View 1 (cartoon, helix red, strand yellow):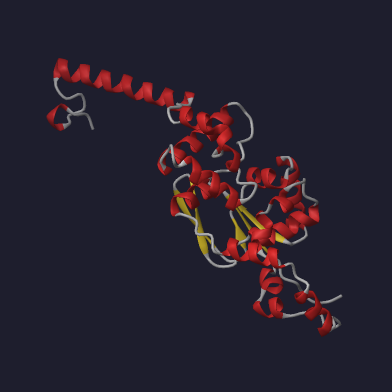
View 2 (cartoon, one colour):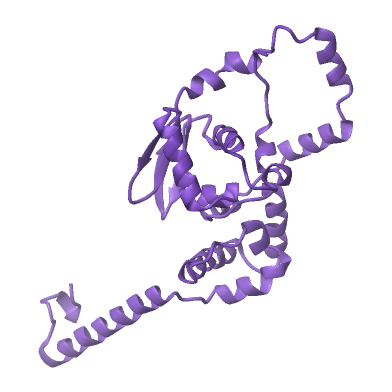
Length: 261
């Protein structure tokens, strides 16, 4: 049966789509859904990385969390897609960029408007007539959701955003009654550091900003990772040594006003 059909992008973030481990075919379709349909960018470790139409900057870890796979399975699947010239893959020390080959062939405006030639017009009318009005109303509400910039930054930077984006926003807005957006962001990022040190996967963001973990978020505000603490202590030790040398014999490194360069 030739032709194409449209899928609402919000459906790919629904609990129904993400409720079970993905099949390989589902993962392939999902790549089309999460790939950029227009040029843009994303932020990784504070660095703005440009991204083109047909590309996605998802890491192996984020795909593993989204598809409920192991990282090794994701790596094997991406390798297979690459060998079959279905994607190209560019990796560096910052991130990985997945480009879907022939994206424009599948996702061109012409193809979006096409329908199978053998589909009776009456069948199309009947389908539209029998569409559940409550579902239509819900879709219209979802389209009108306005996501605050601070929430979008958290959603972009946090590694595990599996689940409903709209529900995550609701949890986020409730948590904002007791914490600022900046505090929530800081606590969530500290949570990822802690989970990495514990060698466990990050919590799902919708749960982390929900009522269950609200008390934990407040504690995570003051969390210092062993690596960060080691750097802080090292800097303090160095500064004390510089101050001692300055006090004994003037600027340690010839800097003005007793300050070391």
